[in-house]
Amino acid sequence: MSAKNTNNVAPRRKSKRERRMKIAIYIMIFAMVISTITMGLAYFIGL
Image 1 (tube, rainbow, N blue to C red):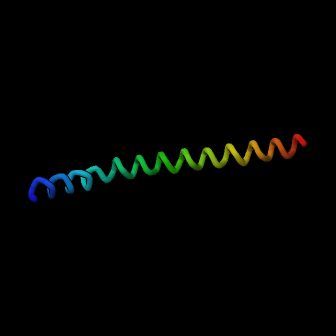
Image 2 (tube, rainbow, N blue to C red):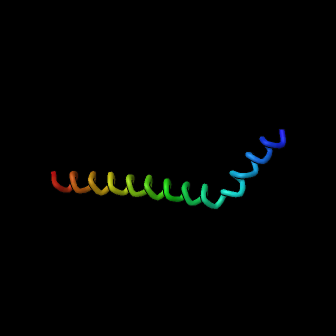
């Protein structure tokens, strides 16, 4: 059980890295949404 407890503590110490990864993922999703909206507006204006 002690080994499992140490393994559970390790990810908690890497919370900063996990938060950075989550922020990077949210930024990528936000960029994708903006790109799709801008492409849609450009296509709509083109028509």
